Image (cartoon, rainbow, N blue to C red; front, side, top):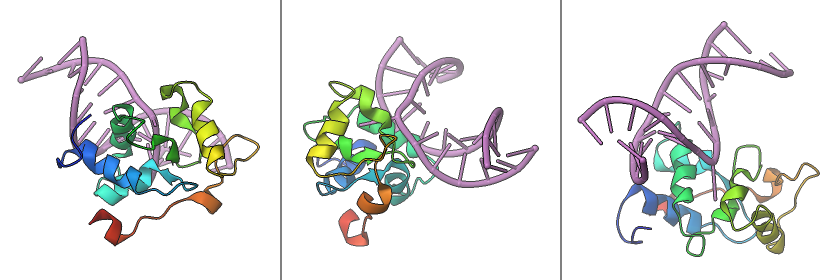
Length: 112
DNA sequence: GCTTTGACCTTTA
DNA sequence: CTAAAGGCCAAAG
């Protein structure tokens, strides 16, 4: 877990993820495109695997379909959904997040 | 220092 | 419409 001040790839991802307000979710592709690496969305998720869950709200990051792909990386597979529901995120019957309602859109100001 | 491995996305067939 | 493969960049072995 690198320092918040360094400009490593990790910190850049963490910064964006921290900017996601409660009750909102984003996708790996969005973050990737935000960093200028549209095709390398894998790195985003990989970076989160090394992220500190207490420092980065990784539970607000889902895949393109709104599925909680990283649920197995949490304490328990239910933790991710529990936290999102706790924040008021609506889930579908499939257990996927309603992106139409909760997808967070980054702004040019957010990236600084 | 080369090989493997990802919490994915986009493009072809 | 579904299915497969390619691509991308960065760590760990």
